[in-house]
Length: 428
Figure 1 (cartoon, rainbow, N blue to C red):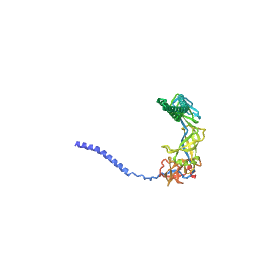
Figure 2 (cartoon, rainbow, N blue to C red; figure 1 turned 90 degrees about the horizontal axis):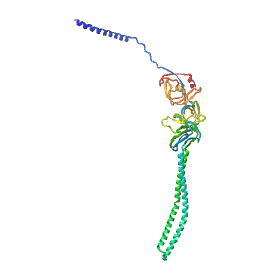
Figure 3 (cartoon, rainbow, N blue to C red; figure 1 turned 90 degrees about the vertical axis):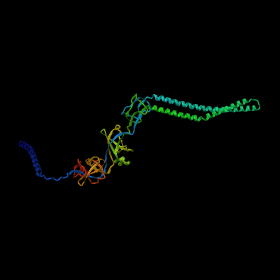
Figure 4 (cartoon, rainbow, N blue to C red; figure 1 turned 45 degrees about the vertical axis):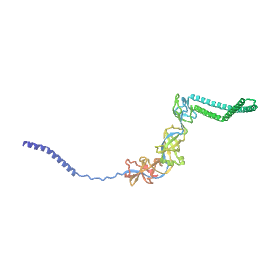
C-alpha cells in the first residue's frame, strides 16, 4: 500500500503543472479572440506636387559643348638618311624653330668618302667616252688608208697573174700576193665592224655615265642630309638623339609640328551632322574654346571623311583664328559651338531632364516617360540656361515636368503647380 501511494503522489506532481499551463493557454486564446478590433483605414494613393512647362516649338540657336584636342596636320617626323654618328645637336625639345634652321649635324666623314668614290667613277666613265670618240675618228681615217692598201694589193695580184701567164714568175709568189690581199680585206671588214659598232659602245658608255652620275647625286644628297634643317617654322615636339649617338638609316631624329596649322579635333554626335552637311551652314557656325582660362576663337573648317572604329560620332576640325596664343600639341579643351538656328526644338529647363535622354510629361494627372534627343543648350529671355530637345512623342502644348522626383516612373500620380522658375518659359 505504501508503494501505491508513493506512485500516486509522483503522478500528481507531473499532472498538476501541465493542467495549470493548459489553463493559462486557454485563457490567453480566449482573450485574443474576444479583444476589440480597431476599424481599418482605407489606403489612399499619394499625389506628388510638380511644376511643368508647356512644350512650345520655337526658333532657337542651339549651343553644343564638345571636348577637343589640339593637333596639327603638319607634323614632321625626321629620320636619319644615312648611318652615322651624331656630331652636334643645335636645338632642344619644346623650342620654337624657323625655316631652314639647323637642328642636328651628323658626322659626314663616311659620306664624303663615298662622294669621292662616286666622283671617280663618273670621271672614269667620261674618260672612256672620250677614248671611244678618239678611237672612232682613228677608225675612219684608218679605213681610208686600208682601202688604198687593198687597191695596191689587188694590183699586185693582177700583175702576178699576168706574169704567171707569161711564165715569168712562180705560183708561190702569186699565192702570196693573193694571201696579202685577203688579209687586207679582212682588216677592212674588222675596221668597218668597229665603226658600225661605235654608236652601241657610245650609248653603253653614256648609260654607264648616267648611272654613275645618279650614284654621285645620291651620295651628294646623303651628304647634304647629314645636316638636318627645319622644313618649316614650328616647334620641336620631341628629340631622340644626343651628340655621340650612332643612328642608322630610318632611325628617328626629331619630331616637330607647324605653328601655322594648329587646329582642334573634336567628335560631334551623329544627330548634329545634318545641320553641318550644307556648306553654307559651315560659315554660320561660331565656336570658342577655353584653355588655360583663356578663350580662343575657332572656325569650323571641315568634317572628317572617315569614322574611326568604335566611335559614336564623326570628327570635325576647328582652325584657331588668332595666332597670338599657341597651345601645345595634344592639349585638351572645351569647345562651345553655336549651331544654326532651328524651329524644331523645344526649350526646357535643365531640371526637366532625367538622365541623358528622358523627360516626363503629364497625361491625365499621371507621368508618362518620353525618350528625347538633346540638340544643345541655350538661354531664355532672362538669360537663364535652357536645354533644347526634340522628340516625335512630344506635341505642342504637352505639359513637361520640371521637378526632379526621386521615384519618377510612368503612371505616378501628380498634381501641377506653377513655380517662379518656370513662369518665364510658360510665358514664352
